[in-house]
Length: 188
Image (tube, rainbow, N blue to C red; front, side, top):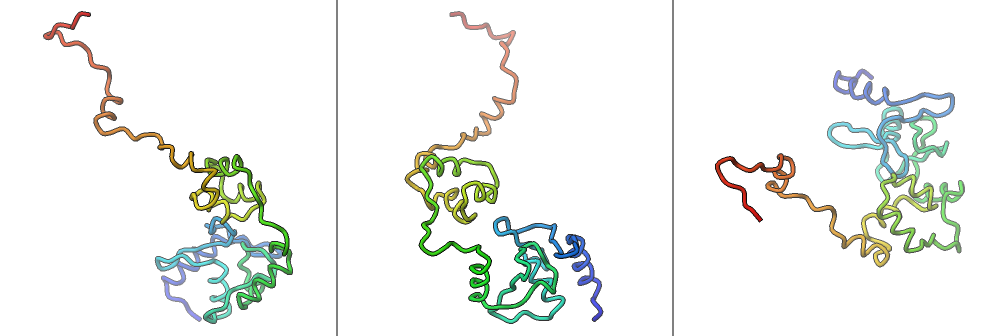
């Protein structure tokens, strides 16, 4: 099928962000920031890179189905590693591959100090998630003040560094005033 020039430019831009290895075709462009799935902007909208690759090679996606990775690599966009399936099949695959929380194992509990450390940390969410053995969404919830509220309350209530007004900024940036030759200096 012949592509129009606009579609061809989009595809060229897309494929320039792919590293084809012997096994997986790895997306090197932007990702979703939490789960590692590639994302690509097309027509003013962001799309998952693996979904676009599947659609371009296999045709339209069936509404309500998701794309599963046979290789279990979220950065992979190789069409023969991708299949359509239901969300239930996706969850069963997650359990089969050992990526699901085991039944009966409690969620990770943090100390108030750990929650505060996460709240003020400048580390990327995924790095914090690996360090604390948590899901990235749990780290984001702490940073947004949705969980561990009691632990982070004092940090959330502290005012951030005050932003000076325009007058204060002008004073800060200008040299200190010097006494005028016309006006006498006050004497103590």
